[in-house]
Image: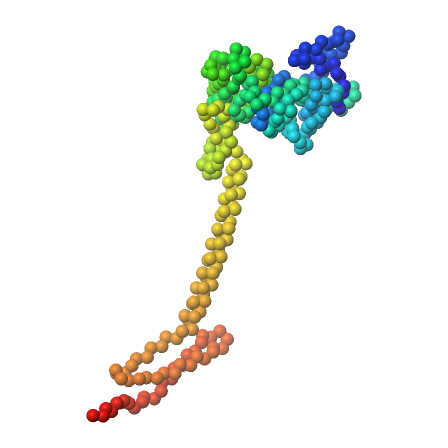
Length: 364
């Protein structure tokens, strides 16, 4: 249930609005009940893809999630909700207490104020929500090649973040969304087995290198320069999953989606969908060929059987001429067999004829 606490809108830093002192206590009380977390300011390239993570409290796993557009909470318009098809798509991940909001091919008109929200459903307690601003530009101030990267346990991944000239002197960071842990230019050891290294090439981009990946490194991160942020999702595969996928990649070669947010390196991953597509392709190709082969075999068998039957009906008859000028006449009679007995053939030979001499007289 969306309630009208307009006073919350005055907290947006970009508007520099002052909260009325008389409502300050109400603001503190209301803000204390909100647990939703998301990025404050997200930038995206026009015509690209944007996916925004919204983190909610564990108690709201079964509640309805929605996406609201508008600067003021009490008058914002709900543009997407879970299990609904529209311009914006919401996907809920209860096991992670996160739902994502995705938009393909954003336009300049999609820029504006939005709210991640969870429906509470009571008059006494307002819906849990968090404000953010989305900027869609042809050339965004901060961007990445891909908003989704993957690696395997013990391996490493590389993400390249780009920023505009105006943000060259701003602080560049790589942060984990869940706990807001951030890393700046240099090398930071996150544990005994993994580390994060950020290097700036001085050409308006910095590269994040994460080595010694662990399964717990999976989750949402973001590149930032100043107050501009771009979300990136990292998925770390287990060793068994990675080996199985490598084997499948040999059996089912495919042109898979680019999973590395770097212009210089590419890591092709064969997803289950790609594998299923190849299985269906093989079936569509193999089944007709198999049926055709079976048909050819059946026809060949029928022809062989027919030729065999004809061969059986042809009697073996051998007549030998007696002398160079002898003509022998034989009579062959086929008798139809009864029941399943074989056909009978009788041969009768004409009585021996008197030798006949032919001559042609010639007049002189």
